[in-house]
Length: 191
Image (cartoon, rainbow, N blue to C red; front, side, top):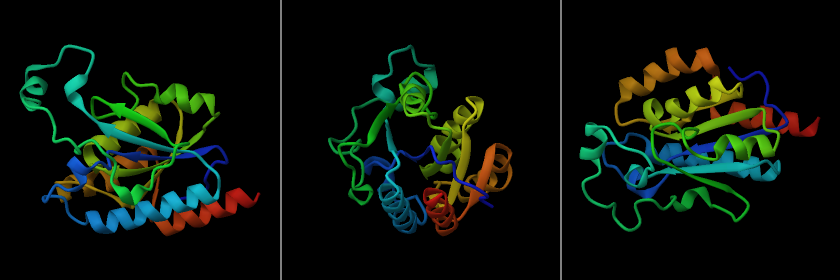
């Protein structure tokens, strides 16, 4: 349950790119995108930053493990890295291309957040047990207050999604529905 949203909070959207969202194995991605859209609108209305990540392991600047190098045999489709239109990106958004599961590893994400004196992160995106959880672990290690929008994320493996929501995320932050998070956000922006 969300108890508070810091005044210096960002919305951090994980891997809402065409090559992932359009995966037919993903369950509930239409509902997830509706809730992401609500969060984006609420953060824009509150004049708070939005961070948007995509993932492309193919151009990582370090040596890959055998498993990683087998995954990226061919370049992605031309639009696979593009953010889905439902996010309604704007020029002031912060864009981060990550190369691994977590958005903090070997990116400028932490630097961008510190520049803005960010203390809190609302996390949403795909995939719950991989990109979202990997990023959450990095955020937790860096001392950010994390709020997880459980209905604004999904996973290719429903059990993995549930495990992250039920067991992992409550150890790192607060977990709630989009509407409850927006209510707290509106309350904190009034004070």
